[in-house]
Image (tube, rainbow over all chains, first blue to last red; front, side, top):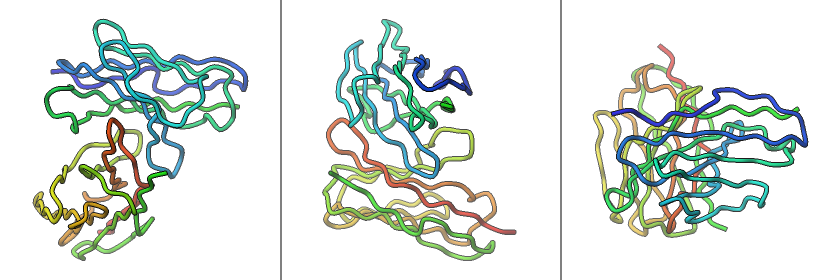
Length: 114
Length: 109
């Protein structure tokens, strides 16, 4: 059973650019949630995807968007990057219908915006 | 806006000592989870508490959910250097988790 993987591990972008982060969910999981974790803070919920549709969103602007694919992997896209977007982006997979509370996190992508 | 406040933010103690970390909110949560996060890694789930007053034990770690399901505590007995890490609490509210800012714990040998 493979765990949650994320790519890339680290990324440096310039303000105004666009970025795509990727997440492969754990085998058997159909739900992916994305979180932003600023340095010294707890994770902040961005959105969740279930069966390829957005299923809940936190307090993030529309320039944060996502996709979920038929194999349940997911992408997080951020347009018009701002300096405050610098953070660790975490993806978590879970299996809706079973133990909804158990989310398994990937190692994260460290995004630096300069 | 739902908030979870963790205290203390930082704790550095000697090996063998006991400690308690608190997670407080004015909101009621359907469940509350505790995670541990190491540098460069994602959070790892330690426990989920669901019922008000529930107590769960994981070796030297004892987790308690408040009677009103608004607060929780994590108690570590005889702390060891391997317990060092960032401890996060998260309350479930509908489809999302509301997270505390974490307690950075350092256990010195």
